Length: 64
Image 1 (tube, rainbow, N blue to C red):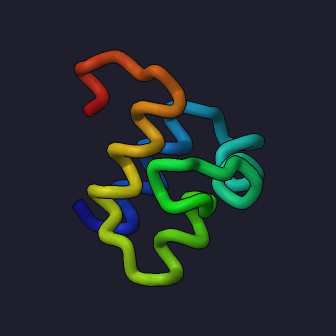
Image 2: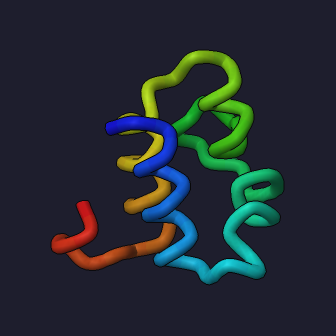
Image 3: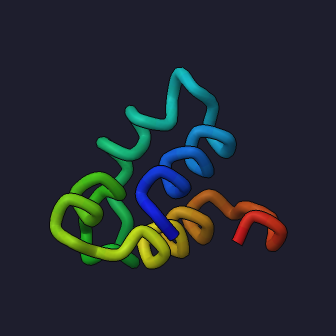
């Protein structure tokens, strides 16, 4: 998964007005106590970050 796909999926899941705020503020234990943006900025692969986001948001299996 590329970064662009990650951001597009997150926008679809949360909406255009909220997804970036959520990525900057929501801390996830699955990412070592980091936000999605912090994890991506430190080199965690987007696919791994998406898996944590998918779990945190309780998204349907079709979005995995």
